[in-house]
Length: 98
Image 1 (cartoon, one colour):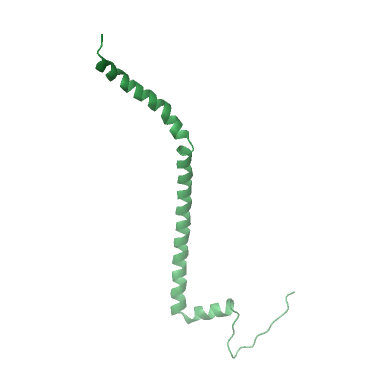
Image 2 (cartoon, rainbow, N blue to C red; image 1 turned 90 degrees about the vertical axis):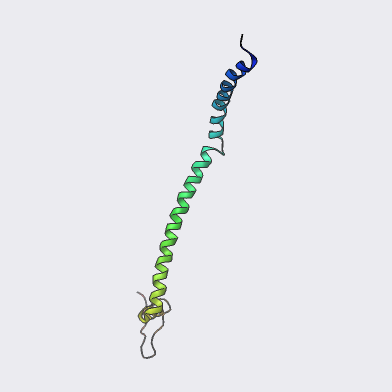
């Protein structure tokens, strides 16, 4: 007959394995398990895409700022196109829209 310590040595690994087989699927499929992991991965991908878009915007704005500081014609273009300004010696003709 096996001693109690030998019996425990045999049953303890089996009991731990059985417990793992039962609890791992429950933990993985729980709302805080695999579904949450997938949702967080999607959110991370969205944040990376947004970050890339913002970096492109920052680069574009830096180029525009540099152009506005260094190129007077760029300032004039914005003054004309966006603000509707004209020079003192220019005559403005306004036509009704058809």
